[in-house]
Image (cartoon, rainbow, N blue to C red; front, side, top):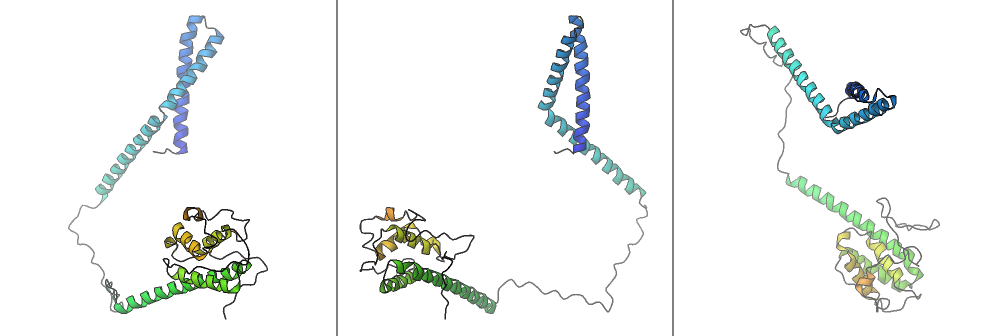
Length: 276
């Protein structure tokens, strides 16, 4: 129970006065044995006060709870007395007929309350289902567009046009089916790189996929290893799953989605692709 500030001050006042009085009497009793020495009086009075406040702090919760319980009991007694008094003041004639409930006049119509439909109508079910599927398809198409735009931006720095188109086609199929096994790139890239930028690449795009729970570490690692067999020839799946090796200093840095947005981060002078 949490007492009010006023109650706390009242209790502290009583406790303080009681401790001071008890300390005063103890001081008189003890100092009498020391010929009323002032130094002894001071020591005894201070020690008695400290001991009294320590005892108070030890039983503080009990004191305040007891006070609150007493207040509650007093309040209940007063409330009960008020109810009994009010009942006694009421007229005792119980035979008086109750006032009739007014009936609605002719100009006031009773509202027509329709029953709640428990079973959904087939037409409404089909409409809502179709609307949901349309929204899902639109969102999936938007994610594919975003990923393709990112591939068009980042991959020409390490691959020729045919290879970039091949990557786009395989990633598109992978986005539509998480278990898709890509066709490997047989040629060389236009730039000699380690596989770290490619690990960053697959992490960046798969973080924007719609059903990300299906694209776990093994799934991503297997896809990129199969798509780029030459670059990952000597790298096992466990190593590939360490996607964020050097997040910001490689040719393809890690691109984290921010604030719930799936957009990629492009340079300020980059002109975004516009769908025709």
